[in-house]
Amino acid sequence: MTGQSPSSSRVLICDDQELIRMGLRMVVDSQPDLTVVGEAADGDAAIAGVAALEPDLVLMDVRMPGLDGLAATEILCAQPHGPRILLVTTFDLDEYAYAALRAGANGFLVKDAPAEEILVTVRAVLRGEVMVAPSLTRRLVERFVLQSPTSAPAERSRLAALTERERDVLALVARGLANGEIADRLFVGETTVKTHLGRILTKLGLRDRIHAVIFAYESGLVRAGD
Image (cartoon, rainbow, N blue to C red; front, top):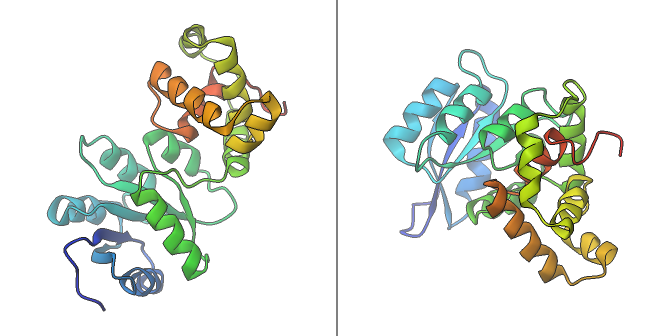
């Protein structure tokens, strides 16, 4: 294991399977800019570890005995200066994932992802990016919004804050298009799309692109199957 450099980002690994924790530790600790500062086998231990070790990032398993990853994510994301949370999950769109994203998780990491992909995802989340592919976000949200398809009046009323073009951008984001694809569709520059998206997040008080997608479906702007 490498020693921690002054500029290293601190990572806490939470998974009930020791082999998974060991594998993730080997990958993360192999990098000079990343350091594993602790491990946890359930949500309670993760919350205690965050309080004691102050990590920058938690790699959080979703399904664990006792306090699961969803409940732990909700608790940690409610903290004013909590760490970023990267869910460690399977590729079958775990039933907890939608709720975890709503709670404030910053993305997904598939358990059997290769080391290079793990490192790219970890560093991106540490930079403040949300690491869920647009198409996967749409599949995830559609799957769970279909279970409760009625849009909330409070969410619908918030749409009035957006301009027509901002609604267009939000709808295309929710349909799984990346910024470049939205730019092509609307015949504008990609920088313009990013500007619109930033204004949408600010006006609606949303954290990131994932929460914009969730809002678009829950407000009724976009419906599953569109």
